[in-house]
Image (cartoon, rainbow, N blue to C red; front, side, top):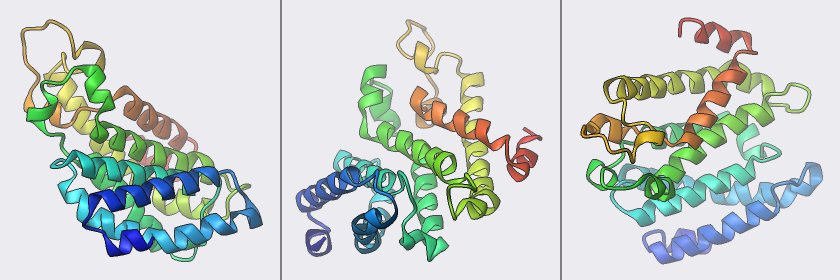
Length: 239
């Protein structure tokens, strides 16, 4: 944490610190109840620092692969920190959870760099840090619903269902709209045909808004689960 605070402009120090946090949260991700005390303390101390990093990094996520790699680690840290429970850092101030959802939305909405992605094979696209960042944004938001919206298991379930899930759903509808428009105007831009021998070139928009199958899986899984809640079902019906 001292490295993150003191050397936030030094990628090597930040990356090393994030790797340590990644491993710590991964090792403690299954802990519940009182056993979560250490993990909760890590979240309480580190997440304000991670927020500062995201505020600086997200606007430049497409300009530097190192930045997208560090954002990828931060997203995985969030994943492990919320894997089985929600820390008091979020429970005691829901604005913090809203902030992290917003970070996920911003990353999902990021346009992929056309010049870089148009020349990549599908296998290369899937391994690109930006693709991984988007995938884990969808996965984290899906798991937030899947794991923590059960009213019998989670104290935050009602709040998630009433306030957070509708907002996530609306954001996903925007993503679907962009993706559908791309597919209808560019039938060769799907994952399965990206390496086909078609003579037509993908449009700029289809490259910018391309999503991997993994991202689409988590998006569709979230939509499927939202059918079971009255408020999100009402939002889904017009679509």
